Image 1 (tube, rainbow, N blue to C red):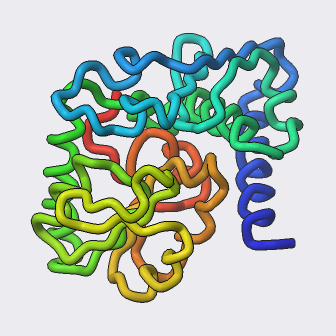
Image 2: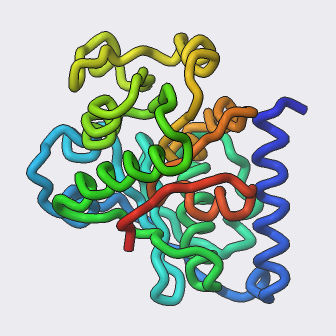
Length: 244
């Protein structure tokens, strides 16, 4: 079994235990998901270069008894079914993983295991980025930072304080200079992880199945709402200052 297969097998196993312990597995529980509009997802930020604003990603949202869980994905769609169906659904695509991740976030929120499962709005991402800088300074001093996933506010604030390299999967970003830093492609990941002291990775890596690349010996912060439940369940460190 590969590292990736082991991670998702363990994630589903632990989530299943949570569901079964709370007697939710066999109940007729409906999880619904849909792709949110830009305004619903992130409001009206002054900055217009977030991936969701540019249409590169969609934010799917699961709703369980009034508790919401979200997942960024490049393969958005609708789903309606029971938790048993969610757990038994093979993870063959980013869409399948988004359904699982959004559902986990909604359920763990409902059970009071996690908070901040709704993306922050308007200009809160700018404030979040500033708080991230202060958090890294307090925890790690002046490290070399690898930013995994182009998040414009974080890139701008991090590169103003630390030596930084950034990796992204979007071909429209790769090779471009953003906030004075050249965006590198996925093929540069291993080199960058060797170079850095701290990894700051988007929680969306749990949806696109690259998360195991960053579960290394080096300190890693998974940012945002998408990875909320996965980080809780798998014991990974998460940073989310202003999520709802």
